[in-house]
Image (cartoon, rainbow, N blue to C red; front, side, top):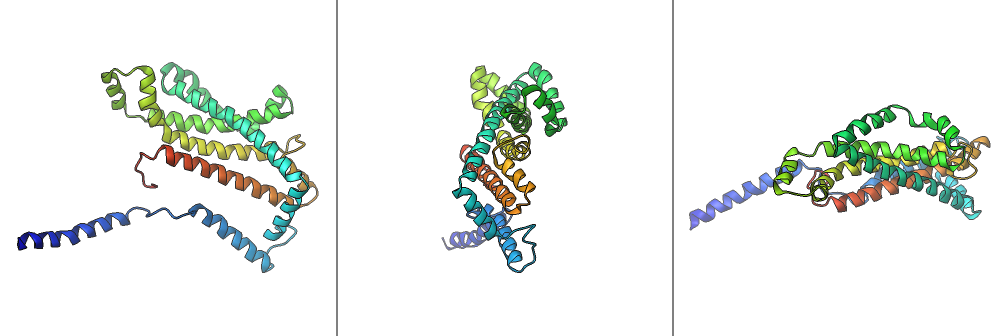
Length: 279
């Protein structure tokens, strides 16, 4: 009995030491609000440099100046109107691009005929700078809202298609053989194997698409626009109002960070069954 107890007592420290060594290889526990550390540090450096007089106020206003300007634009009603206009454009283009990217990826990933017709065309589109299509789309759709939404949709659908299609192509063929042996229908095969296998790549493309919609919006709202954050920044450039330009950039940055965080949250919930390094 004493020999067994001694053996267990000796083995226990060895096991715990081995576990501790294994744990050191992982990044560790996720820190609360860790993604805010970088932006807050940048804000602190900006404020410190402004307070020390290291930054030219005409070129880079202090954070408190930007806050006052943003509050003034909000109370006058200019900023809320421009924000709603930009959100509407981004949401319309994103919805179209999301639907197109997913449908094209499924068609190309599940059919050799679809792949032959779609994949090369999408990659050709990817090779063409999307913003270089603006003059052509203005000729086709006019200079109103339609061409802006269309360009945003193109910016969004390309990363969603590429990542989703790559995830579909990377599904292990043994799962396909297992589905055939089990006699799964086409619908069951898509639901039980294709969709779970493609979700990780889809969410990567979704995050890139969300970011791309905001990047495209910055440029598009400076082309014959009468409202929107980009238009606000363009008008401020003409009058040398750098504080207004920074207000627009901060709003764009906040929207981009919030939307990306929302996609990450949904991804963690949907893919909670995965055991990955980040989890």
